[in-house]
Length: 113
View (spheres, rainbow, N blue to C red):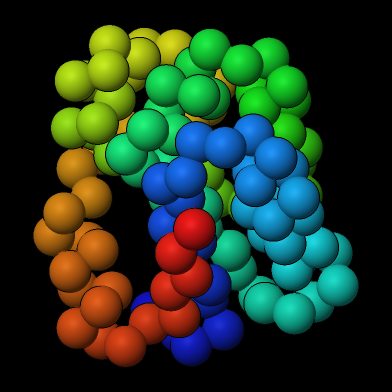
């Protein structure tokens, strides 16, 4: 893992925060060359927001087209009943507990929203 890879842990299901921070920053980070890679981790309440909100789905697609890697917590998605919807949106769904722990232990660049 390189230090020019930003991981954004998105757990806040507020749509305004999503639009005005999460997507604005992740998309512009790549467009402006601030980071070489950006991974958006959809966790907590946000898988449900993404699965049910067409505007959030459009933002996910825009981020993916900009090069943002979008991935979601499988445990959360399963518990919220939205795993297939996320997969249909081309979002990687995997267990994130150990990978997040590894990111933290390796002092990777992690922004939590």
